[in-house]
Length: 315
Image (cartoon, rainbow, N blue to C red; front, side):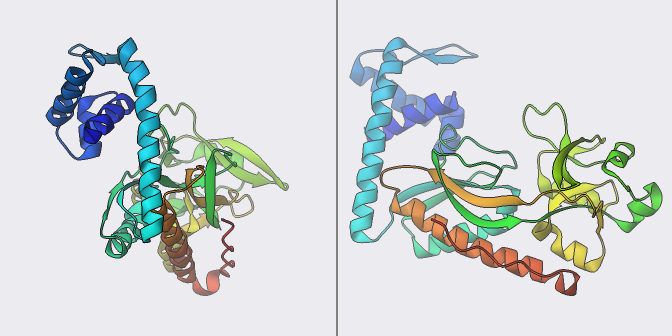
């Protein structure tokens, strides 16, 4: 019955049986069967379903409120048992940035070696996710403000840079002021719903927002890096992601007098009275490995720059 409850809650959150099944690693038919079993047990319909849409019935809305509370209680009970036995249990859903292909993927594998009773589910995304709405346990994100509903574990303040290939600069010229970007191809990171692209830059000790444009955009940061290395335009990237290319001169900094402000790379997870051991254990490992990863990548720049000290953990 517990899996039926979880399937119902996930279907509500995802808005479809197929998406709920994908996240729970079962077929949409299994989700449908579980919800039908719930409806038979309760003697009422939980969803109004058509070929195109589905929505909660009044009984379904009431039941969902109770199910969420019940599942939270069960999760906390599992966390308590895990604390007592010092053995995390269950599954963990992680939403990393695109750099998850490198840092988080390796961390997830290492975490699984340490805690074999945990299933790790990664969701790669460049956009800032609503962790609760997306049903994630924690996320790796660049944060620009403090969210009181979240615990933030800072990894580092990541220096960022505008850069392009020497071939692109030779062909298009070196921009001398932020306004010159209007005459350049800027490689654009598109978020869902994006309508206008702007880059934050520094000018006279203040942060300014500069409108940019370009004929290439993607929702994957690694694609932008590939385009930049192919001399397709100017890109804004965290230094640690392109340290090799900068050290080798394949990419060169642009507008060094107007650098983008650093962005705080952090692990976020929801504030709770008791954080499940599985979440804290993964966050601990991600912070530790993240700092080591950034230090290693920045060290590739060698004499080009000094590597800033990594922060102490503030959790």
